[in-house]
Amino acid sequence: MRFTQSSRERLALLMPAALLLGVVVVIPIGRLVLLSFERTELNTGLGSRFAGLAMHARLWQDGRWWGSLGNTLVFTLGSVGIEMLLGVTFAVLLDQSFPGRRWARAIVLVPWALPTAVMALAWGWIFNDSFGVLNDLLTRAGLLHGPVAWLGRPGTAMAAMVVADVWKTTPFVALVVLAGLQGIPRSTLDAARIDGATPSQLLWRVVLPLIRPACLVALAFRVAQGFGAFDLPYVMTGGGPGGSTETVSLYAYRSFYRYLDFGYGAATAVEGAGMALLLFAAILWLSSRAREAV
Image 1: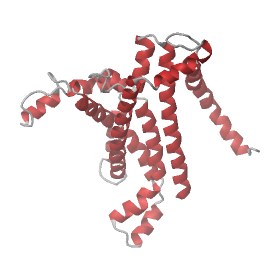
Image 2: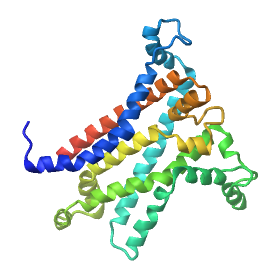
Image 3: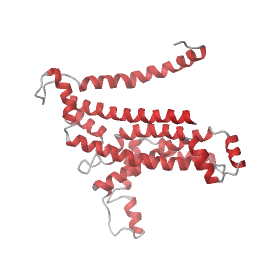
Image 4: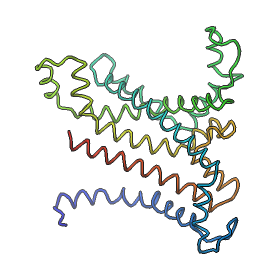
């Protein structure tokens, strides 16, 4: 394979980022994988040769692992689905010309710029049953007759986490989709209008098909981030009540640092990262197919 001068220049520009990525991502993941297959006879009836594999086999027989995996899927599907819907809607609105558009675009990005731990702590206080503003507002409006322990019930605790994540990361989706909208040639939209397309037809038959690659890129990143959620459940619910909001990342952290089961914690993290990577790769493949179809 021969590289042109421009290709070599692009590769040279990418090298610093690739080296940084290797140092902060690839090397730690490689060490984690080796640790998950580390030879140990602890809690296994097998010899040291197969002890690492036994850790991974034990994982799939662990009911708590299946519970955390289910919680992660529910959280990811719920939050990402709502974020994609709201993000595309906001991006289309922010692409229109109206007074104060620059200020609106800047304000929309504020939730995404906040640290997740700070945001999770704030939403934890909002949903607090004794001092939370949500209970106070709903009680004043006559919708509640008493305080509700939003974070003390499995269903409402997961819903509260989804609400907090949607508020935090919808701006990211809107930003990516807005970049896709900015890339649509205005001549294409003008030609569709000249052909008699109504605003709804212009949106559904022209705009949305053209921004599909951008939507899939945003979807890929959000699925990967949602599947690896740690700081939000750790700060907001601690995985409770009764493990109903414990994610794969949180379970791996506890296995590693609280229970000091290093091999099992590493195996949990590796399995979770592998699943997230497969989902990420599948969505990026769909994104490349969509880009070729446009």
